[in-house]
Image (cartoon, rainbow, N blue to C red; front, side, top):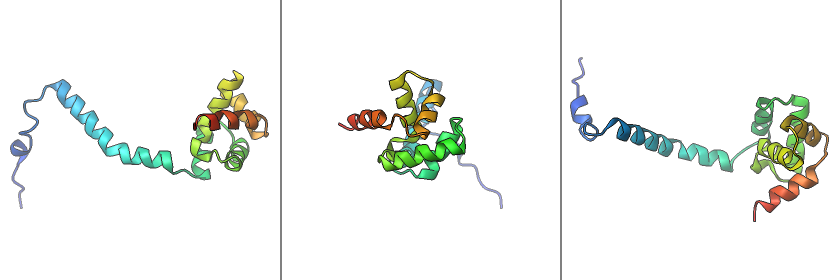
Amino acid sequence: MKRTSDFEARRQHLKDLTDQQLYERFWSLTEEIVKPLVDLSYNHTSPGIERSVLLRMGFSSLEAQPIVDYGTKWNLLGKGMGNVVLTYAKLKDIDYIKAGEELSKGIGWDLVVEKMKAGDK
């Protein structure tokens, strides 16, 4: 069974668009498609996901686990542990790896918790 081509009929609404208009339409539709996924990722995370993010940032599992544990303890998991590490690094004006090492040892959580909670207001 051969499928008859309906390409010409299906492209009618696009045929008069310029390359720039097609480009903009493509990215607009792409944003529309992925928006539910982005929204889901902002509202739903887990210790495993946050640990994975930290591992990809270059932390060892021995460093990532305590950061996630402290983040859970301080109710910051939803802020993203990578974001927490970067925020602390900026506050202390240090490299993010050094910031993560400090946070994994329990150092600096009072400062980062205060900053992250202030951002909620």
